[in-house]
Amino acid sequence: MGSHTKGHGAGGSSGAAGESHGGTGHDKRYGGGVEKLRRAERLEMLELGRVVELCLEGGACRSVLDVGTGSGLFAEAFLRRGLAAVGCDVSEEMLEAARRLVPGAAFVSGAMERLPFEDGSFDLLFLGHVLHEAYDVDRALGEARRVARVRVAILEWPFREEEMGPPLAHRLRPERVVERARLAGFGAVERHELRQMELFVLGA
Ligand SMILES: C[S@@+](CC[C@H](N)C(=O)[O-])C[C@H]1O[C@@H](n2cnc3c(N)ncnc32)[C@H](O)[C@@H]1O
Image (cartoon, rainbow, N blue to C red; front, side, top):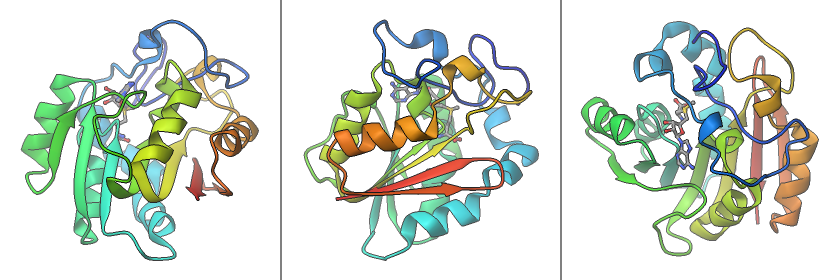
């Protein structure tokens, strides 16, 4: 992973208070390349298995849309658990890598603020280290709610300055994520403080 200034090495989004803001958001977009996303130290930090378990708790999920899929890491993890998996991303480079690395899933071009899918297309919608890169967090949450049938899960960096990951100014305050999720219309909002990450599980 390494440093996160511009084009940080592992994820990042909204302003210091976590608000959505104007502009393109491109200054916050991950630019660390495909390999960094699959480094062993990152996989350990992500607690991939635990995240997948928490997302699937309560059952009822047979399909997943992995938004901001990058190299397809989470699409692959859900695929292994038997879900039909689709990943989307704005980066053609990432999509090419994901198609190569995860041949069992489908990967399409698409932005979280305007998802190219019909309402209720997937049981689970997963946003892994990407919501903080949104140019409009509220819009991304609204789109997630529209496209997900059962639940939405958001994996984010903790709100603290760290050597690894995006700068604090790009990170989302957890309280803000909870507030924006409620405003987006989610009735059930769970926050899980993982060893090194924040996971939010949102339901109707
Ligand atoms: C830090 S990477 C995380 C990749 C993957 N979710 C993971 O955890 O391994 C963020 C990814 O989100 C993508 N991304 C950035 N802005 C996006 C947007 N508006 N819509 C969809 N994907 C976006 C980037 O291209 C990049 O692949």
